[in-house]
Image (cartoon, rainbow, N blue to C red):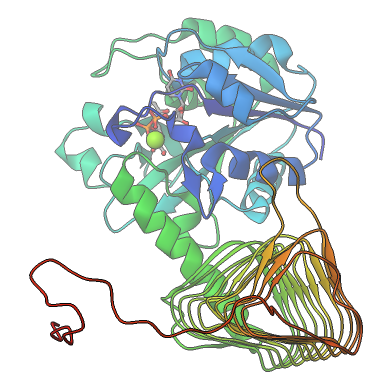
Length: 466
Ligand code: UD1
Ligand code: MG
């Protein structure tokens, strides 16, 4: 579609009580302005302009897109004044769609419907996206005449009792005839309750100029809702999460409670996937057929193979798990973790930049970093790879079917041969040969009487104090 799109994002967001500019507050992990931009891009606009002002440097830094046109509104004098700053960037031959940086959930379909509705009346028309709200408080009201034609938008602060009772409201999204904007915007006055130049006054100007004004409506009301304070942001976050949960349910995913899942990215699921309560997903997460995710897991940018079981409280970031694996409860799988088919990482096991080969197990209290572990290896409880010497990271290599006894430290760089056994408590500083038992010999086990303690006779048994 050939059009200009202008996103108004210069407002301060006073009611957020925050140092972060309002349009940078995240919804489902993405800044509000980023969401609006992503939606705008789906319409492939010829020009895409962001009007910025409050927190300008931060906003521009957070949105480094190279093809964007930026218009500075140094002083925030209202939405009409904001649009006027974008005017020099617009192609006068194309209509202009205005979006609000604080209304993050509007969908492309609603915008397309608005453009279509406005175009049906000819080349030059004004389109406005409206919704009917049970509680229209805070929004501009749509005033219609007896023939149902739109006459004006009146801001709540300027409205009398009768107008306040109107439930149809302005979403802030307009399709405007660009050639008219120069004259209209310079004719705006700020003689209203807020002392601002209102974009909404263009509706009255269009009516006076006998330019057709058409309304369109989004499929759902919440699409059009704006964020003005933390409560509205929280409410919209819940609405959005609920919509995503319903989408997963429709695709056959078993959610133990659709109210208790948070998706701050994308979750792609196979068949018979189940997700228990309280899980957070970030980035792109792929769950293959039959995967089950236990309660309170945080899973970011991960790929999980068929029938793998993720137990409660597992954290994952940038991990790839094969089929029939098990992780958790309380496992932490950091970037570069690869569990091959049937591998297991149990409770309080942290893994980073490490491959755990097929069928290998690290079931209890371990740290495996920068390691390459072969197939069918048993990593005993408390085993630690000492991968960091204070300056550099080094690699640990463990061959197939090795058995690493409990509480070993593997001081990297070091290698354990295939089929090797490390005795419990070994501090391995040199390579351990394949198929041999390697253990510490010098540490003889001795038993000595307890040290003399103040107030206690030597040799007397210590009292058992809880
Ligand atoms: C505006 C509309 C109102 C509509 C509501 C929908 C006007 C006068 N009112 O009210 O009819 O129901 O949105 O959410 O248009 N902005 C600037 N520069 C400014 C002022 C605002 O860029 O000087 C931007 C804000 O960053 C925001 C958007 O414009 O993204 C809307 O501004 P806001 O102050 O939230 O207007 P509302 O009072 O919500
Ligand atoms: Mg607003």
